[in-house]
Every structure is written in structure tokens, then in C-alpha cells.
Image: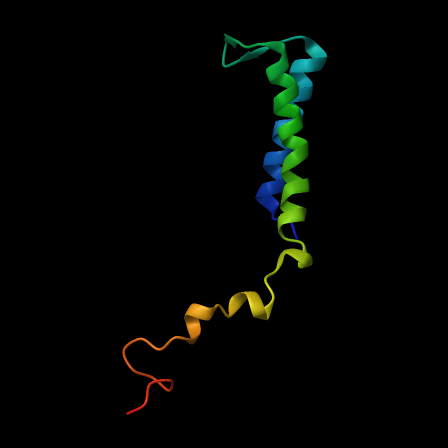
Length: 85
């Protein structure tokens, strides 16, 4: 599974909170008034969390063996097989 449980929970909470504010025209957080567009941003963040989690953990994003072996790893520092005795 590519997504963790806490990512699902946070995503659902954000979407629920944003949709509640939008549907009830109750634009406030802890009693403080907020702009109406903030509710849409909260809802969009809830949608974006699972999409980003899936994309960032996709197999195509894993580094290849060539990317892991950088040229710096082949230099011998402090002695090694590349330095003659």
C-alpha cells in the first residue's frame, strides 16, 4: 500500500472540514472568521494529500542504481583500492 493510515485520516479530516464550511456557509476556525476562499483551499489540500502521497511513492520515482552510485563514491579518501601503496 502506497499511502499510510495517517495520510488517509488527515486527508478525510481536511476534506470534511472544508466541505462543512462550504455547505453551511460557516466560515470560521475556532470562532475566528476566515475568508470564504480558505474553505476551498482546505478542501483542495485534503484532495491533494493522497494524490501527492501516491505520486511521490510511485515506482518511477525510485532512484536507479546509476543515480545511487555517484562519481564521488568512487574516489578513495584516506586510502583504499584506488591508491597505490
